[in-house]
Image (cartoon, rainbow, N blue to C red; front, side, top):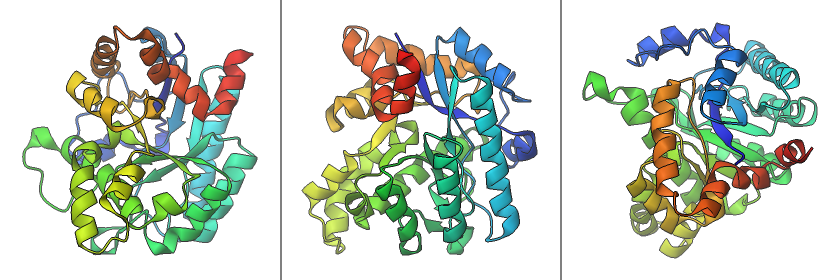
Length: 321
């Protein structure tokens, strides 16, 4: 059974991931750093994962400058080189410059998709710091969504590692309690702003089963309509159902049962979040996924690989040949 991991991170040395983990209160899992393609392939082989789509962690802080553009270009070039070195094992979502740099972002989208052959674009849920931060559905980013729509591109949307309140407990640091909710806020913003509907040809994957999205979508449907959203509650829920939801760090039978009734079968994708977590941690969720769909082999096949093949034709060509 073909297995494609759509949530698999690329940690270049200049990212200083161990340091950023400390700042977020996250304990770096043993065996994940320093990262290399070989580290990922070892974990993939142990978990019977055939292909991983690399992506940089969601970086929401930056500025409009040439250095920021160059850094995105360099990192995309590095991921492209990994794909060329291991063409049967990796693909990649391109990172982009700081989103306020709309011109730079549009240039990098063109280069990444047309020259480097990325299979999609990775985005953070928001960009900026504090009260100056803007979620990805903001009006200023409309040209970016228009271009992604024109290209019928895939976007991998990951919650930003930000917080506006103190961690409730060291065991509930930003990656544990905040990141999934940031994914929800971005997803909801795209829906109520009308951009999800306006740019419906953009295929958006929400990390971690959308975080709190499945639970809060009906709340948004009625209350946002009450607050003035022009979409009806039914239209809002319809737009939430058009997202793709990947399973990293979220596969547990009750949550999967929720998604089974919330979205069509082709909207679920498999993810691990390795090497942000250890192979053993990721495997706990994979085991739950397989147990949940254990009596429905066709459905399991869709989630772990076939849905991704449909979404990424380049991977289908690779698999068939």
